[in-house]
Image (cartoon, rainbow, N blue to C red):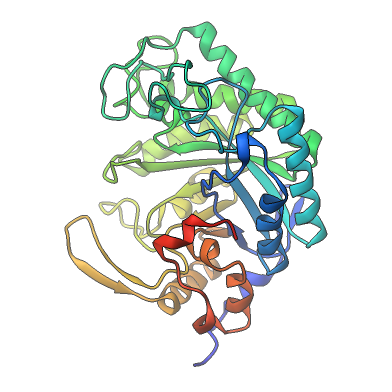
Length: 373
């Protein structure tokens, strides 16, 4: 089989602010919950190192708990606070850098996606802008403004911890129906104060989180912001129904200090706004509107059948994916590509892509998530 034309462009270095990434392939953040009592151990460090030494340029860690009691919902999701956990992360950073990769942590609060009684802090109640879960059911009281400021401070502390430990930047998780996204989304944000209302009002919390993180790390430290239209259990959800609405979200975040946007989609080749003339995906629209570098993601490296929102069955192959991807990279639609499940299954996936040896890649299966390798 012939080499995919232009695939070498994925393996050229790319600059994000003052960080030079060895190539355009990133590892997407994927929750693993293999850090005992929230402390990343030697196995976690080895897991990330394997990807770096096999050609992944930028590793984005699994979501990590900011210093807030209800940040996550499992005792083995890694913490991003406390001397024990930060010592574990320092080892992770050392291993990745030694292998030639760059790494940023994803800092995270699940908000109203958490259930009452979830570990690691059973007594901690879920928090969300209007006290609602993702289905719009009332679960707790809405957050007060003082509580919101405490959360902003917790994100900033996590950002400062990342810089102190030696990471190359941070990614703020603002996607998939978690806390920041719950402020952005009209279904979960019914507030009437400055944190609610229209789209710009609903962006206020995200903006303040970015501003606080920027203040905590200084002007040169890389800040990536991940966002999505879709939510957990709701793939039809939309924050922005048009490019004009998307711009209303991106502008305040860009001004607040975001350097790179990570636009999470289920399938990277699909147009985001079908009623507009451009066939750009979410990452491409984001780059066009914000002028910032972007990371695209969505079914990269997977060889499978899927159904679209109309229920129509489609076949896609890894080779077809890569051909579409290379074309979009060549047209400067986005800057990096994040690979999730394919890299979870096979730490050598990027190397095999470069060597035109994808036929030997270990395919992703449901069993892939059951071990940390």
